[in-house]
Length: 388
Image (cartoon, rainbow, N blue to C red):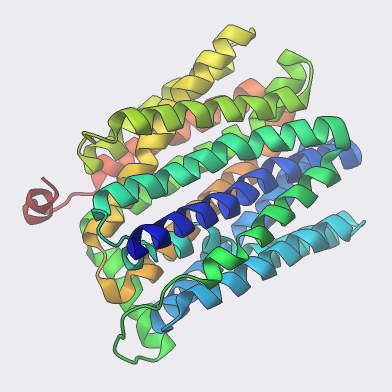
């Protein structure tokens, strides 16, 4: 009973915090559009929030691995992240707002890898593979609710209100993070040594390295598409808010795909490869689409790829990461992916200003590059045997 309760609290807190995070991205994009009508301003705010994650993730993970009560650190990180979003909202000058977004982005991995790394401490009698699938579905549920809330709130109350809702949700997850159970005692090591150990695992374990490198390149393309969707709504459906709602369709299809595959999940390593190719096809379809039906089909196809890809990545990390550096592996891998998202978002602004079709074509190209990356990184046979 106690284990189930803890898992329920974990899943609830993770869903609420991640919904706030998923809401904050579209809200900042719409905030930038509301300031000067420029896609570049919105993409710059989003890029500022996400591009610093690569620096913050490894250190945050090392601190979580070191602490006996990692939930306490995670809770304070959530409050600091929410405060950063509030400062972005309060600032009038765009350069200052972008600088604050960069500072807040250092804590962004807390909402992704920081939560997931605590999963083995709360599963109780639930098999870790099932718990990992449930955890991945919290991301999907957040992706489903976040963009939709951003579009609806921004449409009826303005983009600043959407940012405020994101802040509220992140703060609401504080109690769930604070109540996470203590971790098992681990050898005391200096932070520098822990950082070195975590990076060594990521780079020397070929299965982890391949999954991380592939998903990072893939997320560059996802970041591009993320910026392009509101513009698709504005140019082809009549409102940027409708573009944000397309992201909700992506999340809904993602949730459905994970629910269908939960009983008999496919091999995670091969799933990473297959989903990058499927994402490429979805972005090309969106680039060619000018009607509601085609754009909805493209969004559904993207969801069928995104959900299984995330579940596969979690499965690989839980399988390959040693317990003593698990948090750092998760936060570092998450932060690198977030940085890829930021690079894609930053480059999508200028590209989509020229043509949203060009932006989506570039996003598809990134997926093909991700698939190529997967094929180029060879994994030794023992790792593949263990994965079977």
